[in-house]
Image (cartoon, rainbow over the protein chains, first blue to last red):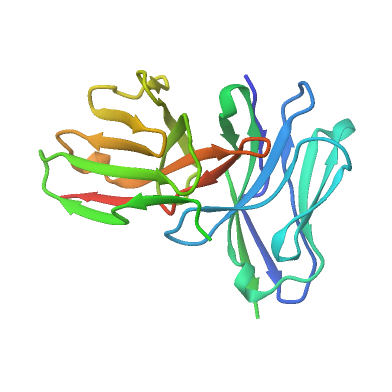
Amino acid sequence: AQSVTQPDIHITVSEGASLELRCNYSYGATPYLFWYVQSPGQGLQLLLKYFSGDTLVQGIKGFEAEFKRSQSSFNLRKPSVHWSDAAEYFCARGGAGNMLTFGGGTRLMVKP
Amino acid sequence: GAVVSQHPSWVICKSGTSVKIECRSLDFQATTMFWYRQFPKQSLMLMATSNEGSKATYEQGVEKDKFLINHASLTLSTLTVTSAHPEDSSFYICSAPRSPQETQYFGPGTRLLVL
């Protein structure tokens, strides 16, 4: 079965510092990969997605992610974190019938 | 702006009552919608796939008689939690795929508290 792993449950960074959130997916055909962000008590907002083509994907809010087939990874990055980026981040993989498989999530905390 | 809406955003009910949650796709049609459940500080767990014009497909371990799903039109799916109990208290989120490339868009969620 397809799976998505986010190794880091919590990450704390200082405001202005760079950020990288890790995501690994189980081996298989070229996956559809997504990053979503969830603020407390709210639904999920799509940050970016990878379907094919350029392996470096630009998203909203200054986020980007790089698909690396050799490492089965799709890590999310941001060069300079803002306090408003504090939230829960979910990596997801698309599958048959448009179903999504989610990672466990990474909670990002931003220190002033 | 939002492309998927949910109503209500939160609901408190007594144990034993039924609660209906609506999920609507705004300005696009969705023959399929998905219902998720999220416990505090946990990831989303897929409960069922709602199919317009046919029966919903439930994930293993999800009671279909407990969580009734009706996909009445191409823009509306409803989830009814029947005879709700405190353990059904959770955050329920729906999603609908939208072209291009069938990206999933999520509703804002419905927080259910059963007393």
